[in-house]
Length: 225
Image (cartoon, rainbow, N blue to C red):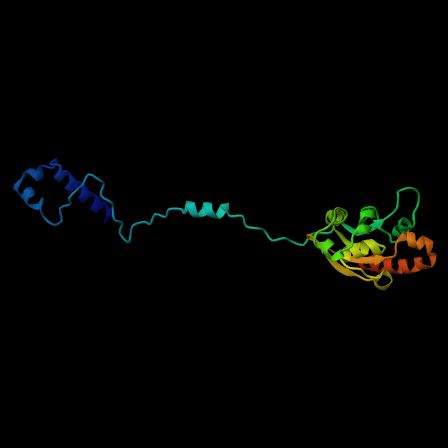
C-alpha cells in the first residue's frame, strides 16, 4: 500500500511539472483539477504513515542525559571493623614493659587486633562535655578521627577523663566501669567499655583484679574465651 501511494505521488508530480505526456492531452487537463490531484508546494510534502507502517522510535537523548547528570547517593553499607579493640587514654611512653601491655597480651590480642591511642592533656581542659560532642576541640577531634580510622568493634577508655569525653557527660568511673555503651562516630559504630586507668592500678594494685574482670567481658565478646 505504501509503495502504491508513493508511485501515485510521483505520477502526479510528473503531471504537475508537465513531464508526463498525458498532461498535454485533453483527459490530462481534466483530471488536473480533480479532487484527488495533489497540489505540490515548494516544501516537501510530509508522508503520513499508516497504522501498518513500521513505527520509528527516537531515543530520548535529552532525558537520558538529564538522568546521568543527577548525582544519586548510593546506600551506605555497614562498615567492616578494621580492628577488635582500641585502647584510648594511654600514658605509656613506649619504653620497657607496661601494665596495659601485659594485660593486652593476657587478652590474647595480636598486633593486628588492637591499637593504642595516647592521652591528650588538652582533654583535661574541656568543661562543657555535651557541647564538645557537637563542636569537638582539636584534641577531641583527633580522638574521633582515630576511632573512625581504626574502626574498632570495642573502645576501651582508660580512666575518667577520656571516658567522660566519649560519653559527653560526667560519670563516676567507680559506677560505670565494666559496662558497655553503644556509641557512634561518623560511620563507625562501636561499644565503649570504661576501665580504671593503668596508672591508677599501679598505685592501687588491689584494683587490678577488677580491671581484669572488666577486660574479660571484652574477651568474651570477641571470642577470646
